Image (tube, rainbow, N blue to C red; front, side, top):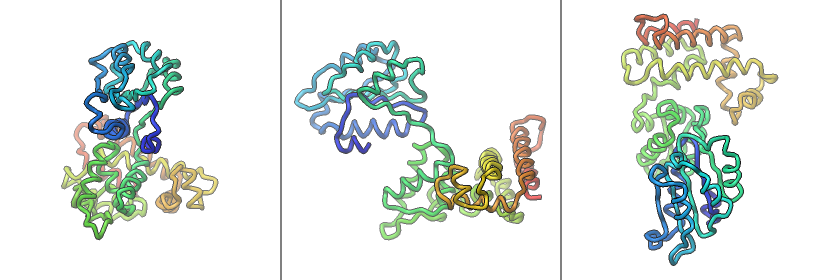
Length: 330
């Protein structure tokens, strides 16, 4: 994006991967910014991979622009293009006046097509848009809001990440909704703003449950579980199990850290990026023994299986959650 904004264009952009957000971000920028509005009628073309052959794409790419420095050719659903041999030949000698953008979603180029990949890399950009991991979401949320001139605290960040998940298109939509609600004189995103705009309770949520478990706050943990048992639309065992499993799995790994008495050492060991992100793991190391953590991981696996109906004919999700929380805290 930095190069594009500096108008350093290359003849080929092959955008692929399981996360459509970045593919759309890049291709939409090219569509909206490379050409002037009056140049687009004759010099910007959008094709769909299921409707054209590779030879037709090459024929379109070899056209000269009309009264413009460039022509832009965007191929959506590029994963549906069959017999890519003509494209491979084109990539070896592309038209310098054509910017060809291939949008290949929900997958990547077949690993056996090494010459095809090599040809793209020699003349253009081969970009893989990967799904973000859950632990990467807070950094994405903070970065997105900071770029828009807003700030957010750690709790609000985690509330949004837990409520929305790793669907970046939906996440960006929710963040834009939050931004629109902020007054010009106060651009801070608080738990109350998140509750009002995203629809997640600032007091009863996955973040607060995790915090209660980390600090072995039995009363608070049971309050939250009771709330979700009585308000199933607000959350369920199915959304909390991955969060709890991820925490205790990392806590188990933290026990093997050579510097487990150092917050920065644990953060580096767990690849968390920032030292303060290890705070909950430092608390967990004090509150849970290594043996207990192993037992908890086993219990989470057991409850996960039961929640999917294995060896569990009729125990409701709420009771399974209470059983798990009791086991963790006692």
